[in-house]
Length: 311
Ligand code: HSE
Image 1 (cartoon, rainbow, N blue to C red):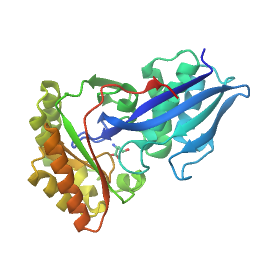
Image 2: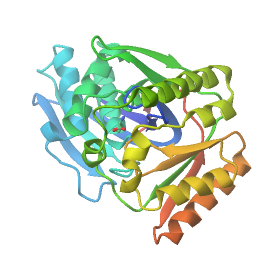
Image 3: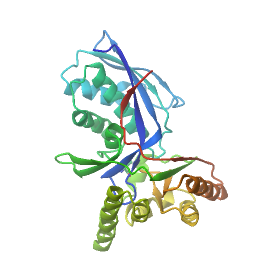
């Protein structure tokens, strides 16, 4: 068994348009790193968090990384082991990029590796779900891809049954994060509890076409299938400038544009890196016109999930 291990878990783009709470994908180049070290006193403690400006709870029972690590010890029957966590936040909080899920996945996988990998990734997913439920609800569309990488599709939650797919290499993902925090709880509070048959038909068609596009590596089909007629319209007002920024992305040639997870990050899709940069610039300019500064990244999907890295 190791004495110390560091794990990186990627950012995730949840929902991807019509896949509310059932579909997410891992993102390249962004994520959190959690280091787990053995201690002689049993239980999980958080020794240090960097990159959160002091905002996350240091009590392991109230922090997603701490809750996920505790759940791993419990599921592995190793609650006698002591684990100290150091969390390096690479992801902004409340941005729609799966920040809490990345910390949970990294902490859970690091703890599992520290114990000599008694649990499978599927077991560890349950630990991550517990952690995510404590902060944003019982959904696996962020923790799933953060742990497994690729596209993660939940068929059912009871029992938990999921499918993973490879993200096409030609899919270029533009992420634009406005300086406007949106707590997940607030974004979930506006989600409609009932929908019409027409909305169901529209979103089912989009979701089916989205999966087909991902399987075929057809970025244009993926882009036009991210049209969500249920959740996006309900949340749009929570993101200042949403309509203008989406219009700017489409005008700059994006195949589609929607909200990343619970927002406020918006994502747009293309299959060309240079066009991705133009789309990002157009989206940032539209936010700027609403007096909102933003950060943009042009990247791709990550088919790797949580993994051991050097500390
Ligand atoms: N599916 C979730 C939502 C992801 O949109 O609320 C955010 O955690």
